[in-house]
Length: 222
Image 1 (spheres, rainbow, N blue to C red):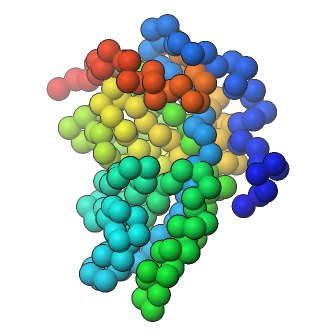
Image 2: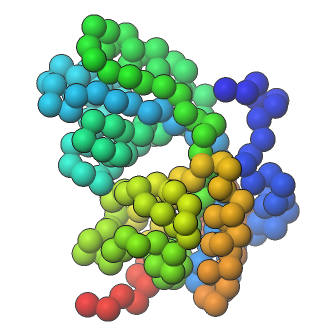
């Protein structure tokens, strides 16, 4: 990981802080770049009771065993990526200590854990038309009966690989995208959102905005 004073957001060149607003004023779609977060890649045998218990003992939450699901406890989020692979998301700065604690707890077992925090940017997307925007470029079935709060999946969005996590039913999403594709993904999302009216919000305020939301879901056919 780069020294803190050398770190730069993947989208710093877009000067989003200068474009961000504190109140989206009824925009159908709201975008932000999420603050830095720790991201750990974890691999291990999900059928091994000792592995599962060891991970839960360190994180305070179990690694999800059902496909495309997410477990959350406090400030730790664990996303299912495959039968024996997960992404652990932590507050920025906790990742190094967590790697050490996991390594100690699983010593002697067959596993791998590595810090991948700087490999992906995270774009926050919310609003009553957020789902409509994603449906323009993602082949996943995003209907609430198939993909809802607590769901995650790896897919493509406008031809770039993403990890999509739906956080709530507004809907609000975190879109994990490799840094080299983040500029393209952001510009595509902006363009796809224009017809609904969109706002860029300061990254520290998006959670407040989602809490104030009318919580109306975007229209979806039955």
